[in-house]
Length: 273
Image 1 (cartoon, rainbow, N blue to C red):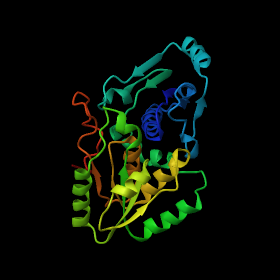
Image 2: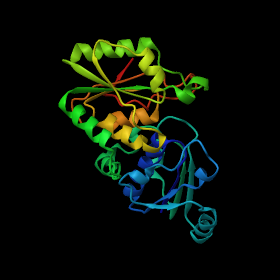
Image 3: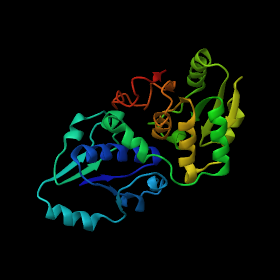
């Protein structure tokens, strides 16, 4: 069996699940989700329950895991020590494999892209506002714009994308698309409405919150093109976009720390600025 520890927000959980699911498919084993960290980690909740994720979850797995650790002889524990892609993960073997990390590269699961996309379909019924927004998104040359503020403002590791980044991104979008319509997502919409302006038609997606952020993810993925920030949530909104001709623009600078290897985060087909 493959057991992966989930932690962080929806975007992080998607990466952790995807890497573990790929390993489970590769080794033909069952996948189990360890969600016990959310008992003490209060910033986010387990968030995959709105998706087409089929696996067993353990809210208090310590006693259970101790039992299976003592029962199985071939046990493997893997804890991510570097942010970059490690090809050794997909080769892990054992009756039980425990995974702990963030695994933020599509290289961990691109072989099983079809299965991952199916698992990440939203099953929870959408709000009427979301349905209406999807209809609008599908009828125009839609571009999602993600502006992340919130916890990033006071975290020295994460930079918030500046006006220069969005100006350059919009220059690229306007040079390649006719009549783009911008759909703006943010965790600080009041600030965005007061400070973000463009000559393009703009729709502010302001009716979702942390409890319904899976609907924002659905909306981002429905857009034909994406301008993302240095956020795993933003990343997944673009990756789940099914448009084969999509333009995805991402920041070169993912962290304010050059020692962190971020070479494998952005897919090669995306534009980095």
